[in-house]
Length: 346
Image 1 (cartoon, rainbow, N blue to C red):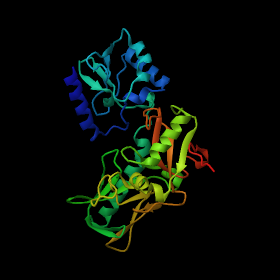
Image 2 (image 1 turned 45 degrees about the horizontal axis):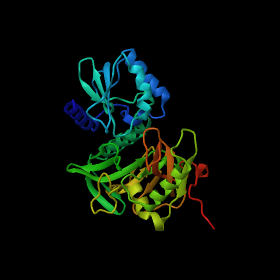
Image 3 (image 1 turned 180 degrees about the horizontal axis):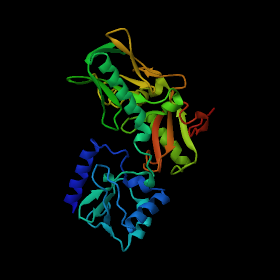
Image 4 (image 1 turned 90 degrees about the vertical axis):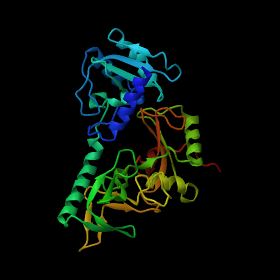
């Protein structure tokens, strides 16, 4: 059984990179503090209602769910139509390292990540956030085509020659798209929709970035509460260039910031706007957007970086339940609404 689980898990990871699904995938943590979501899933299982897969395959009807815990992986808890209701006490308490394995009526097995987080199960859909981005990519490609199919672009003091297209980048990387020559991508950009710091929302997460500030901030929040609640207080502090530059720059421009080679996690810049244009009277063209940030710029206005702890029912960070730690713009969460867990002392 473990071999089959591993094979399905690997297959799921591979396919996620090329998925055209309009939804993100479900996770083990998708059911924590989500009573309605748990009830919906159980109803679907009991009614033999097909679940939507993240890939293009037809939806599948599930006859069995196995919960595999890290502590006892050889003795999974098995649920079928006879006891699907009991999942209500199990799903909300699963940890990220536990596994949920679904078996359909054809005896094919799927990890939880193989299923789409459809609106019924709390999903907004990738299109909710990526529709504008894809429109920008399409618009840039049309501009390149209309300019003769190959252009030179000057950005951040460098000129990139023979650009023939803009390509999408695999999800969950700092870069959202890249300008490419026939040999491959050369200009990697992080993209944000809208035209203000508030719509810009956040720079990036802090996972994998070593920072004393993050450690102290998380510890301070943890002293106040073991976990965040939906609609409850959120926490934040202003970051400073002197003490937190490494954290800020990596959150803004990628976890590989500082390395000599640009790439999907070391971008040449951040561009914001719903209508990005290539402007100029000929090669090289420049990029025109509502807002552009080029490393090592650290903003001091409405785009100034803050560290925030926000509610997220599908993850735990810094030892805090239902918490996402990330670097945001000063107005993204409404800085007056963020509670400072580390008040200054006289």
